[in-house]
Image 1 (tube, rainbow, N blue to C red):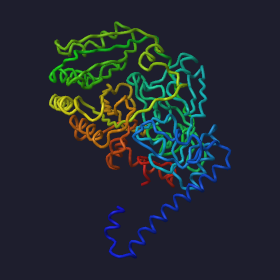
Image 2 (cartoon, rainbow, N blue to C red; image 1 turned 90 degrees about the vertical axis):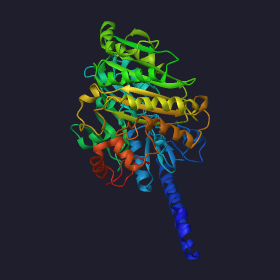
Image 3 (cartoon, helix red, strand yellow; image 1 turned 180 degrees about the vertical axis):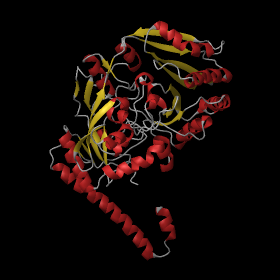
Image 4 (cartoon, one colour; image 1 turned 60 degrees about the vertical axis):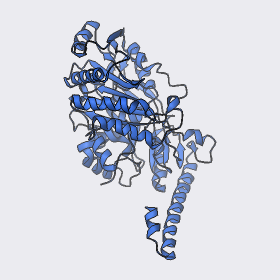
Length: 503
């Protein structure tokens, strides 16, 4: 846009106006930051600004493809301190974002742009479990590992959630929260019975089915656009007494036709909507010019019942693909940590350098579509500019038992959830390769489905247009979400590049 203005400027006067406007915008931004930092300085809340020692490390993104400069990073210890810093930001007209675990794929925990106030919740980590009701109150500085470990240690309780212990409970619950226990117990947000929320005017409110029910609807699917959730109350479940973890592997020299047959069998099985006790995840990639496929997951029950449940999938695999099955029998904790590793989040978190896409499908893809996809993998994927993998979660089960409009989360009818992930060399620690990596992942996605209708908002893609992400992530809920944005955040205090816009 700036270039167009300059190109249109045919005289010195117009050029002067252009540059004056730009200078004014920069002055306003600097002024806003000064107002914000002056306000924060009087609160007694630990604050980092660009001049602070440690600011550089504190503002590093988990996805190093992004680099943003927050106006300030604050570390409140109480909901009242969160309230105070939100009031400061609102007065300064600075965008506000919360950082729970900091794993946003687009670095939205840093604002997704320069100049945001980052409310880092890492000092707010209390958890309690009511032993009679099973309700757990967890502040959003906790990571998934912290929450899972605590509720296991205090009553042998469980929740459905992902398998990365360092992921924050704030964003994970806000945008879904699917994992190995999801088909059995639903999404993590489906276990939320109330939340403590700091809203745009700094008030601290409770959102539940009985109190501020419209806000409660919105935060279960789009919370960061409406406020800062400082604590979730989850309805935990008794941990399953026994489970079976399993791994299918296949020959390392599969032909494309064989790979298509295995993937088709997996998708058809998911589309048949098998028992909710079973979760399957397909892992797909290319090695030495050949597609590799493995299928793993968990069955919540006995070995005998697992054998019955998995039978239709196993019998649908072609007979000449070197299939091998390994199983283990565990209790809940042993089964969870067999996939997650240690739940301890006390050590330093790792980082990555990546671009990812996602899509949901409510049906299995056709043999022709899968063939086109596998051909792309072996032709373009074998010499791709990035390392890459694909995960397909069998979806549905208890997730689909919740009505589509019961929460702001919009994807209840899917049977398959895809994550298509490209990362830089040296396990994601080397520099990103640039646009060629994005182009490859986009091509890999479109070779299967050129017109996806839904995507998972926890696998956020910042390259989507506004029309695309609003439709893919929020579907038919977008109009209501915009109206609620106007009601709860009329001045757009909580904003980032893909936050719910005002109507």
